[in-house]
Length: 121
Picture 1 (cartoon, rainbow, N blue to C red):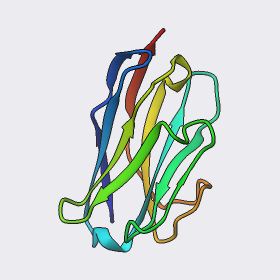
Picture 2 (cartoon, helix red, strand yellow):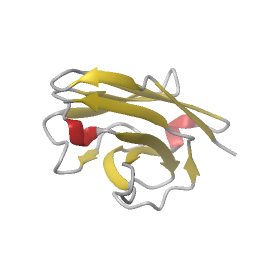
Picture 3 (cartoon, helix red, strand yellow):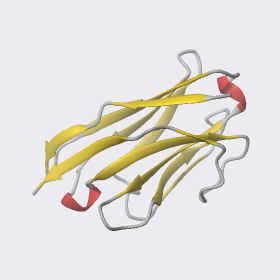
């Protein structure tokens, strides 16, 4: 079993920055790809970014490309999402997910509980 715990969410003004973290435990972290998804009130969950198990490959949604950066520290079993130039439309609950294969879809096996990110305009 793999457990994921998100942290670092909060409130920020538009144009500001925030970094959310996903701590992974329970299995060999370096075997898993990890992704971030988000869900805004009244909307479906959407893909944000993903990183391969080695960190060699990344993928981003068009809406965050150039503003968000996903990274991982395998020694700390943690994945980060650095969010810059935040917009009001980035407001959502952010979830991290882990699986054996990196994908932009929701086919990840393990999910965290989410962390709220609120961007005030």
